[in-house]
Structure formats: C-alpha cells, structure tokens
Image (cartoon, rainbow, N blue to C red; front, side):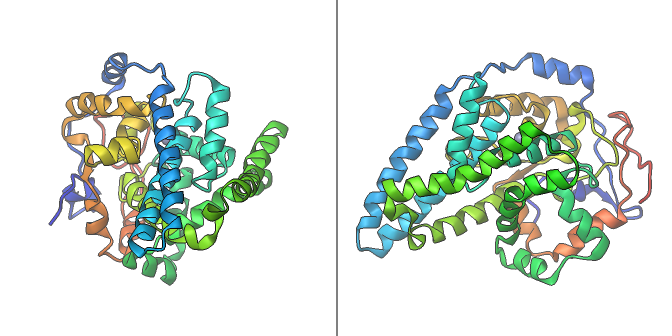
Length: 357
Ligand SMILES: [Zn+2]
C-alpha cells in the first residue's frame, strides 16, 4: 500500500518518466508566498529547545546512575532525542536562522555540533552546496553516492544495510564531514579563512569531548551512549533520505522556486515535528525558503500546499521508508540510470524531458 504522494506514482510505463501534475509555482507565485512570510529570526524558540536538551541531559545522568535496564533504555532514547535536536539546531545555525546575530549562530552551531558529532563549518559548506545544486545528480553532494552507484552498481554491503535498516549511510556521512577539509583542499576550494574555520570546527569536537569527560565522565563512557548513537543514526536516515531520493533529477541548476520538483516533505505528529526534528521534515518549505526560521515552516506548508496543489510532494511519517526499504536499493538507483534527466532550465510548465543520459 502506498501512503505517500510521489512522482513515482505517476510514472508513465512506456517512457519511465515521472509525469508531473500540471499545476506549479512560477517566480511570481513564489514571491507572493514569500511576501506572506516573516523571515526575521528570534533566538527564543531555539533557546527553549537548548534548555529542554540541558534538562534532558540532566535526566539522562540521573537515569544512568540507576542500576536498572528500563532506566538505561529510556536514557538512550532521551539521549538520541538530544542528538537529533542538536543536529536540527546545527542546521538552523548553518542557515543563520537561529539568531539574527552571526556570532550567536556560529557559537551555538559549534555547541550543537558536539552533540550530533558533525563539524560545523565542513557540514555548512557541504550543505550550502546542496541547497545551490538541489536535484543535480552531478553536483548535489547529497546525491553523490547515487551518482557513483548509478555508474558502478550499489555495493552489496550497502544493499544489505538498506534492506535491514542498518544506518550505514548515516554513519559514513559523519566521516565525509570530518574529512571534508581535505576534499576542499584537493579540489582547490580551500581558502585561508575556510581552512581556519573548518580546522577549528573539526578540532572543536575532541576538545568538547575532553571537556565533557571532566564535567560529566558518566556521559562519555561508550557503554552509556553507543545505543543512543545507533538510534540517532537510524533516525537520521529515516528523516533525511526521503527528502531527495527517488525524486526527479536535473542537469542544470534549478531556480529556487522550482526546487519543490526535487524535494519531498514528510508529515510527522506535531510533537515529533516541532520538538524533535524542529520542522526539518517540512523540507520542500525549507528548500524554497532556506532563511525561514524552523518555527515558521508549518505556516509556510499551508501556503505552499495551496500554491503547488498536486505538485506538493509529501510522505506521511516514515511511510516512504517502510515502502522503499523492502525494495532492492539497486532498483531505486537504476531509476537514475534509465530515466531521462529533466532539464532544470525549462519553465515550470515545461516538464518534458530534454536530455537523455
Ligand atoms: Zn538546509
């Protein structure tokens, strides 16, 4: 049973092409929606999340002192919540939407990076590239693995991890972020300021863990966080992968108002959406309005759903994962090989394939 609205639902069998519904969003429609939104960030909602996380960490420390399996398991769920919260806060700070002050975003972003194991600036540089090239299978860093696997096949271990829900991809992406300064240097993108920023962000992590070992030695003992990290990695995959995988791909840069064509939102229960993932699941809204603070994305959803009509793509909960984890990952990647790539330069109403790859 299919629970989500997806371009795959409307594949034209004869051509293997996603037949996108005819209603869309042009530049003027986009500006109309944009003008109805407020972009000035207030730090208060994010500060409330950080205070909640500090209280959760205090509860985790108390639970870990109890010699009880249920208390331990509960502590791991709570820790995973903090880890995902911090990933969401890092994301806000990277977009400059946690605070109107850049230094606050940088400082809080680094603080959050400690609890989601992601170096701030390397992640930020990759993520901004992702927003620029969303849906480009050649240039969107999020789709880089798909490009490699499209050409050489999906490794067996990755297919096994996909089918068994083992979050291998989420684990590996953390190493991608940690080694990204080297990749920037190899590709000639590194400048002095970027070198200083990325190295500071990478070195911040061991420094932060050393401080934690002094302040809260219980928390840094591996037996007290390994299960929570595994839960966090599973959540990262469940939340992140549906946003862009199995969507249309493009061979040029999409205008920002057309990024809905390469992005899918997910709808979660209110508490999960607002308190756990900070509305990161309203991903189409985020891609069209990346400088909109997280607590205003729900309002943007209402406006975008009206403006996009059938073109608004949304999965319910983790339904996309349930549906697609049963499939061989190779068959999902094969779609990128066999489906003609749509030309991103075409207008909103012109969705005919322009180039076969
Ligand atoms: Zn983003």
